[in-house]
Length: 458
Image 1 (cartoon, rainbow, N blue to C red):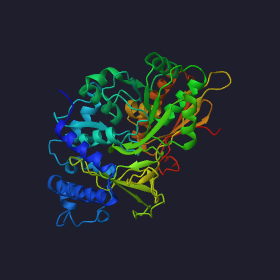
Image 2 (cartoon, rainbow, N blue to C red):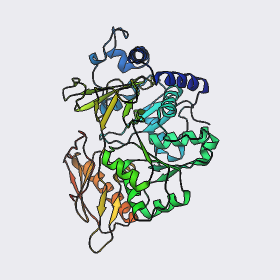
Image 3 (spheres, one colour):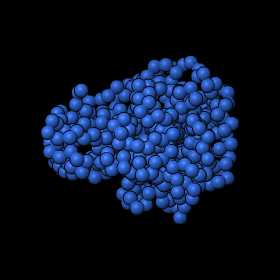
Image 4 (cartoon, rainbow, N blue to C red):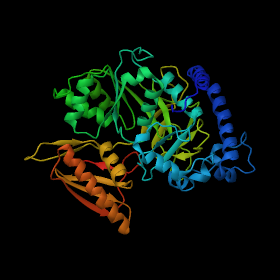
């Protein structure tokens, strides 16, 4: 069975997205207001949780800041009352995403489902219907700023996604869905796992010679270093990045080392395409379909141009699983000045995930680079440990912390140490000592999130 896709709905949404790309501030505000009222009405009708919160309130007059902040742990605990379709049940969804053979299969015949990485300490499961997917498809197609004209049927293109290809993650599910829906893409779109050792990853990329690589900045840096060392022989014409912080210096390094344009974007499991880079190099929020509020530690909105303690998302596309003032955990600053490209979509600066690449090994052994997202994938998928921080304290010494307490924490750490040790050996980093500590909260990075993977000081 094909994944959910409604051609007529997608066409209609695409036309609206195209029109809104150059719309005025007033037109964008009108779209937001109408869609927010529709979302609130839908939530009040279908969600037992929001029926209580919105009782007696007029969706057309309600100010968003009057509603409480929603956080992932509380929502996941009330999942069956949160969703608007009573057929969606968390236990069934958990079983579904645990089966890696069903990536991009339609759940209940009508939902696209993926899970979040649990970077905030709590894994999430998110279901999207054809309406939400039509919005994501349209935003991705119309607002991604390709540096060169690409064939819409991808004839001659070879696109490689380098990431965690074995789980129900948003990027992996989205790519597999596209492969199933578009036979041309099935031949040109490839997934390559970053869980394999660097030499195998480089060999696979050299054999494929993709024209486009889509990946995370930390992975892109590894590939750039391999290119400079002469081991990565292929050279893409474009590099698409997202999912982690990308500094100006890192972007320049990638462009010089790989000899290609770098196009950055910002998204999340909760909203696939939040912002994309324009021709002037600014990230523009897709404000016609998503609302972001930058707030301080007390939940009060901060002035434009300032970074708050966290950011709240309201997803105007997904009525099945209402995300209203949902705490994303990232720090987002909205620029007060207009962009030179002429767009009226707000320019944002994001401080999100910025974990370190580990460099393990000493004078007697070769240095092995371990990607932070690979570490997180192993600990979450193979050991079910989501609340952790891994800190390097020497060439071959790591400390694995968790805020969990008691016997269950000790058991989780034993599983995690075994899984991580096996993974490091596969990567060529043998003899690494992993010291486990429970009941210790990890330190936070400048983004406000716990930095999950911390390298030794240079």
